[in-house]
Image 1 (tube, rainbow, N blue to C red):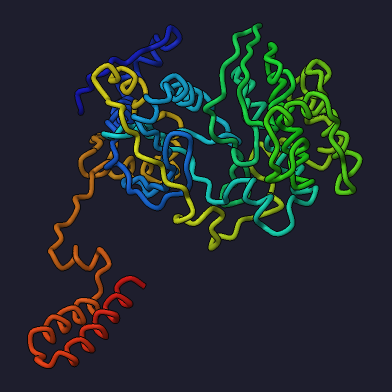
Image 2: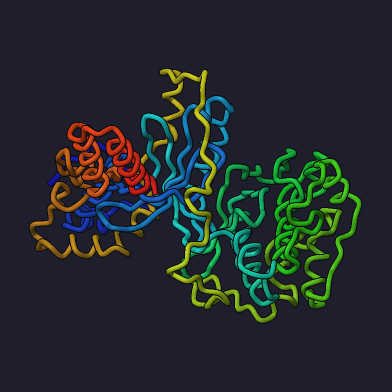
Length: 462
């Protein structure tokens, strides 16, 4: 049996004869072995890394795969120098801690955290279906039919309910922060502006995105969860109409004017809205937060609105309702890699040992519940437990789990061709030099040189 360095903490309820018998059983040994495995260090070599999916405030987001289980994730990289320049340490650590705390099928799940020389990395649920902004504005006519919009609104209500159960206000509800999975269900992502509200208390802070911030946020007043219900109203409106209620898509207008519209203007409704859809938007976009839908009874009050009469919330929360739209597995619902703007190099910022405390708080390895779910879903838990008889339960970590695959040694020609140099280009290049040395007549030399050099450039750079 493996000697475990970590103490086993037992609560007051876990004592007496039943628990003592459990301690002596092979199952307890296996439990400790799995917990030991869960605490193994996580590094970049734990994963295979693939294409860039997008970018966040502090770095790129790319696809990655756990080597041991084959499960795909999204790796959100936070560049250390960029964090330090923007004094974003508290924001990054806050997002990590909130993601660890929340366990909801309507909010992206954090499975691993680790650090590299240059970045801090959050390994999150991968969402292959793109974000709502892409679907609203890049898939034909702007907006969705009402049935689809209300389905997403129902899932968002469940997600906000799960956050509010943990006393968390999100504060940045907008289409680009809502992601679709490969089945067509949505999840809330990017919890960088989310914060916990003390029990019985309020907070204030002018944070969010222009055009989606509630009036009480713009006015820097105290609030609890009311800004999120305002944000839900903005999202429902945009999903149906094709633009946000106080700013048209790509409209060039000053921030002050958008804020004035939010505080003073009444949103306009077209024939796209049914009476129920119009009603729920009006109730969610009420200027006074105390009179806003959801301000008294929270999500229960919102889900009781007639617009959701066809939604079975119990089946929705159990993940057995089919979405109205299923993403095409062969389509890519995001920008091409070449269209994703690259980050500039951060200059004049230096990392030192004073930053190590923050890094150690951030890079803590596996998150228990998502990691355990991964072991079960991938079949690793079943396979390893069934490999050996009960009387000889020893978890061979070295053979079965987190064994990095060594990179094979590559020769010169492999590396050369890997970089895109084609055989035809090389042959043309050598023929070119051969003719330079062999042809004596000046005019033939120039004609041959120009022709072959042009051919080489054409083959190599196109």
